[in-house]
Length: 389
View 1: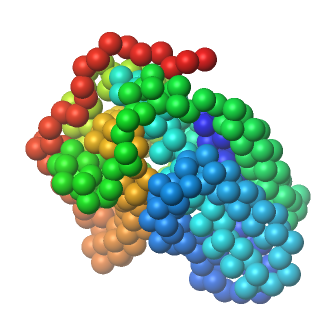
View 2 (view 1 turned 120 degrees about the vertical axis):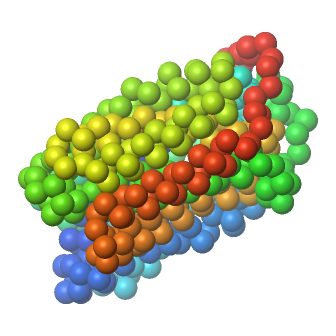
């Protein structure tokens, strides 16, 4: 159910994303103001993540998840009815708070109800839902935006409210205590952020999540389209081809990587993912044409898949499956990377070159790799466990 909800959320976001800046421009504002409507969602999501983590610890994952989806859905519906730029800006900010609530609570709930020897696989399936929704969303969002700039907001709200309603009913009937007993998390009290930060494995997971946010969610989305056109002198269609290659490789690798993380340990695949991300940055820095560019994008896809499942499993191991604030801090690291990465890489590309920008991105991945090299293994061997039906 969590994977289905993740797919619905990502699908809806992909549908509405093309319409947001165009809808804002319809109020006669500048390009910078239109971009602010996109940025305010991410900014509020980032700053409100700690509050979302505390809410999870005090109210429980299911309540926060349902409220978060409801807030995003209602705010999106009202955003589609906005009569001014200020209304749109405020409502997108409210949606960012709801998004933080959903993201932190859903991931915390996932870690709570799966056994340690299933964390990699469960995370792989869960992240595949996000990935497939993110791929499918723009395919519907583009034509829908061409028809109406308001319609995508209504469709997004509809998908969220339906998915949230179904999930709320289903999860309310789910016997969490039985799942916790099977997963071995029933006796764990929520782990505080200070306790988690004392673990070098948790710190390595956070640093690597920051690097993923910088390279994959930030630079790949912001600098690569400009690099393809201005640096490689290729048509804009090659940007789409590179993003498709990266997404397909990521989708192929996610679930097998999850199995390997569960059977072979977290540390080897966290290191491998960081090394692949480092290699991807170097490949992009020295790409002179389409072949090496596509290879770099494929490496980003494989590296992000391995890091996605291994870092999540490490966090689950460190907190014993319970702890809203460490989960929130882990998620914030990715958001921070996605915010800082495009700004820093863009400034380096302007002041020096695309090569320097991508080498700096590779440098961030190198620091993350070092953190992975000094961390201990967190996986504890135990007989495979099946959660109750």
